[in-house]
Image: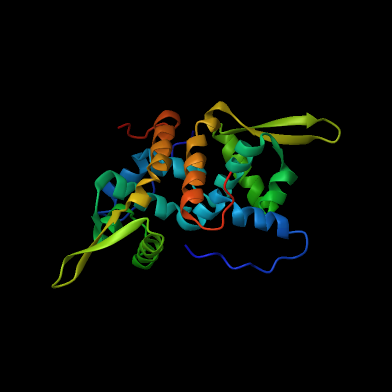
Amino acid sequence: MRARSASAEGPGETMATDYNQYCPVSRTLDIIGDRWTILILRDLILQGARKFHELQSSLVRISPNTLSARLKTLEEHGIIARRIYEEHPPRAEYALTETGNELRPVLRTLRAWGEKHIKGVKVA
Amino acid sequence: MRARSASAEGPGETMATDYNQYCPVSRTLDIIGDRWTILILRDLILQGARKFHELQSSLVRISPNTLSARLKTLEEHGIIARRIYEEHPPRAEYALTETGNELRPVLRTLRAWGEKHIKGVKVA
């Protein structure tokens, strides 16, 4: 996990910046606090290991570059692992690690909340 | 809760779009899946009812317009409630509702995950 470098803040902003820099919620959001990233985690939790094109067809409007960048960030932080399942041509799939699995309650809560409070969603 | 209007999609995208439209995780993220929004919920959970300027000084780089828009969305979906605590001049504060309280496990998991896996954060 890389430490964020201190940013140049104006006077008076230092304390609040430090607060967010040291806040575990804020720092976790630096890694996964993006809509696409949470939907990638959803797919890996619900469907197990997924190939790039499977994720791409589930996340309709995501660009290949964005998907690639999000997967790379998740891999760098040990949340998902990339596995080569075919050598010629090389093909990879992505799966949650143990560390990634610990984020399951986030998804579980979002799902339960949506099922209870939003009209028109599919209830499992 | 407003139903999202059907968007014009090209052929072949309908099923995946529908999947996300009916997915309770995706629909919940439509409401709270924004970094600022989750940090607003963090502050209301940790610190109870907060005034606009208190939220603004905690969320250092947020613009007043963005904070105002996020609070309005949360209020429209019954996640927070606005309470007038002073009439002259009118002053309001914001607090989680029961419905909002049900999102606590999201924040709890993000915090626990960050405390365990990210170096340099403050552990409660």
